[in-house]
Amino acid sequence: MMKQTVNARSLNAAHAYGLQVAMAKPTGYFTRQLERGDGAVLSIRQLISGDVGCVVWDAAIVLSKFLESREFNHPGGHLLSGKRVLELGAGTGIVGIMAATLGANVTVTDLEDVQDLMKLNIQCNNHLITGSCQAKVLKWGEKAEEFMPNPDYILMADCIYYEESLDPLLKTLKDLSGSNTYIFCCYEQRTMGKNPEIENMFFELLKLDFEFQEVPLEKHDEEYRSEDIHILQICKKA
Ligand SMILES: C[S@@+](CC[C@H](N)C(=O)[O-])C[C@H]1O[C@@H](n2cnc3c(N)ncnc32)[C@H](O)[C@@H]1O
Image 1 (cartoon, rainbow, N blue to C red):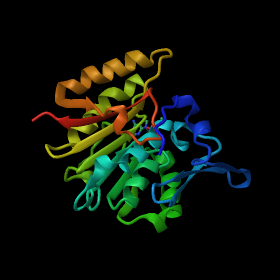
Image 2: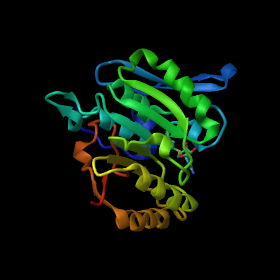
Image 3: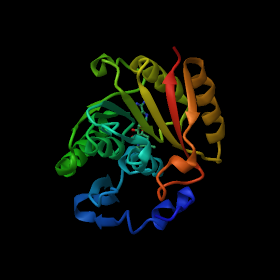
Image 4: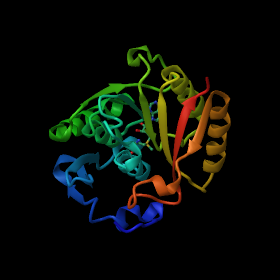
């Protein structure tokens, strides 16, 4: 497969062959399809109108495809297979659903208002799920005991975008992660308005309790990558 670097804003158009958008106005949904490496196609419903969580963001596509990359290949099978995975701020649930199709036992979490959408998407892709997938409410900063013991993996895409959420998000990460929890955080680097400041604040807070490193671009999916979409691998400090 030819290596390609695309700009985040052109990601959808550049990959129109892999991510077809089909409008279905009467139902209030439109569907994004994401092809897996083996040709199976995830079909993700998005709402025509709603809050930020009702559509698939580019960072979610990049993280979903990264989960399929050779970084997760292991002689015993896919590294996520049989693992407990929690997705934060899952929106449509695409990342967690991809993980569940790779054999993980996943809980996709978000606010109350996108629960029905996440449940619909789990149902629509159930035939591809080889692990398990359920949707639950988890508001950052609030009690998270029900998600214990510590997940093996925590996934989050495009969750660093407003200042008031940084403290609660970091609290949830601290509460949920143990010494053996791998966190993958994918975000789109934005240059407008307060975004750079918010990103810097996130890193300042993150480094108090976590160690992190960027996954080099060469290790992202060969097609679904972009210079301005970053994946961090994060672990709680011992
Ligand atoms: C930009 S969207 C990203 C959605 C999805 N991860 C994606 O990349 O397609 C941010 C998500 O974070 C969720 N979110 C925002 N604040 C939250 C909070 N305080 N607690 C839990 N989820 C929150 C939103 O509901 C939304 O689904």
